[in-house]
Length: 206
Image 1 (tube, helix red, strand yellow):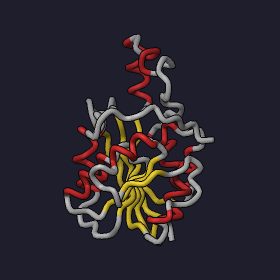
Image 2 (cartoon, one colour):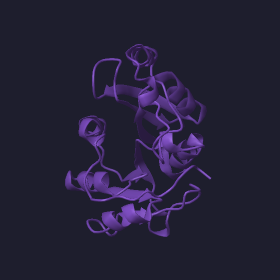
Image 3 (cartoon, rainbow, N blue to C red):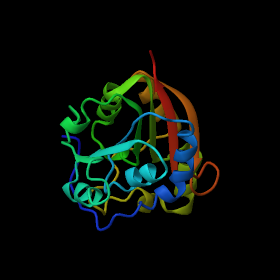
Image 4 (cartoon, rainbow, N blue to C red):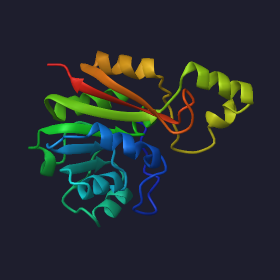
């Protein structure tokens, strides 16, 4: 329903994108003392890193192979989740999360608003959503087109690829439409306005 297919995980390491997202995530989580949900946690590597950093973190993902790997480190903190984004797994259902994090997930979904609505349901009133996705802005698209790399960037040659391409404006607009107020934006990786990804912090409007 949401365009998901389990292509598997080979190890328990953080993904490449986390190498430039992690410093931003830690900065945006400064002072957080409530539970955090990693929505689309993959192999649980980010959950594991957050727990090691002292956060009360949990994760859900629809990948059986990812969750199997994640449970080796945190058997009570990462959980297999269906792709309908309807309800939390029973072990997490009673938690009112202070923060939801979703890194490099929303661009894979046919219905990206479903992720935002799910995050809003599981957050406490006034809770925070941090979402990252590959950055697409006017200057970056012009640079890609001018360099002749547009086809390579928007490749259709790999299964499980990106099906939504967000700019700062379109992701901010979608968050606002779903009842969030965006407070922080940062580009991550590469040069100014040619960022690999962007990360937005927003709060549930109460």
